[in-house]
View 1 (cartoon, rainbow, N blue to C red):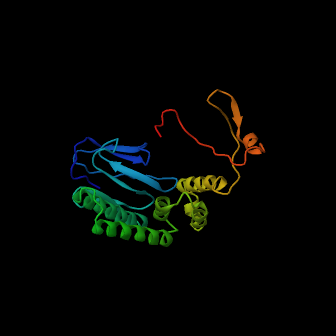
View 2 (cartoon, rainbow, N blue to C red; view 1 turned 45 degrees about the vertical axis):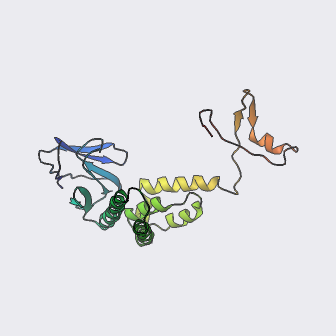
View 3 (cartoon, one colour; view 1 turned 90 degrees about the vertical axis):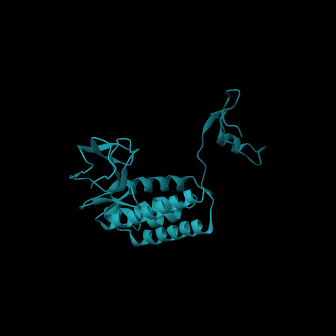
Length: 225
């Protein structure tokens, strides 16, 4: 790829947490990265190590990818099925951001229609891409924390190769955790000191026959409400 607006001496390849995977010197913003990866994942190629300037968010996976600018200085990667679809999603989201700026943050009918259309497309893309990393990205965006059972069903439909990725394992562990203490599940017992420093165990409070109802409020001394 090549960054059009380039004010740096290097191009950086980083993972989603901005951990540097590789870097190469560049005079005009041109760059070529080659190598092997253990499993697909989200990545960023940028002209700044902190990704604050020009950059591109994409899916790092086997294949030949080309990064190019759309809509002036907004960059997307193409070359694989997952990245082609992901670049379409990112472009739609960027257009929504531009429209929101034009309206000064007001939710107009046109803006709402763009958001609803993008969300519908994302839901359709999810079920059509259970064999690649873009489908996993769609699920991460759409997953409902209040309905982990439905997320679990979809996770288990992904191909075996995707289920081996770190992202699938991360989402799977998160869903299992939500399912273990969701509404209607047995609570996890704990002991916590009261304001006077006396230890209180939840199960003992629950077992006290005088307590018909128990309200547990988690709070912090710095929290205004």
